[in-house]
Length: 56
Image (cartoon, rainbow, N blue to C red; front, side, top):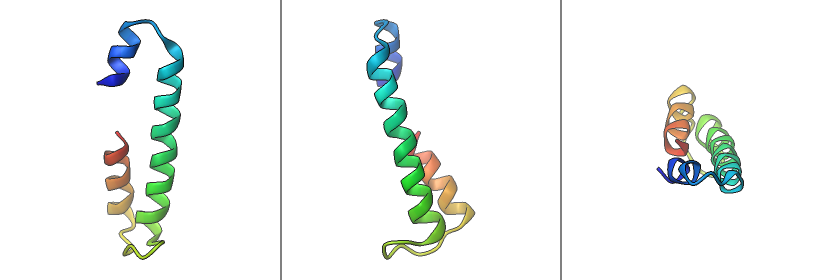
C-alpha cells in the first residue's frame, strides 16, 4: 500500500528503497527458511514460498 501511495505522489526515491528492502528481505528469508539456517528448520519449497509471501 505504501508503494502505491508514494507512486501516486510521483516520488521515485522512496519506491526504490521499498523495492530494494523487500528484495533483500526476500533473499534473506529464502536463505534462512529454504535451507534451514540460524536454528530454523529446513522447509525447502514451502520456506521459499513463505519468505516470498512475507516480503510481498
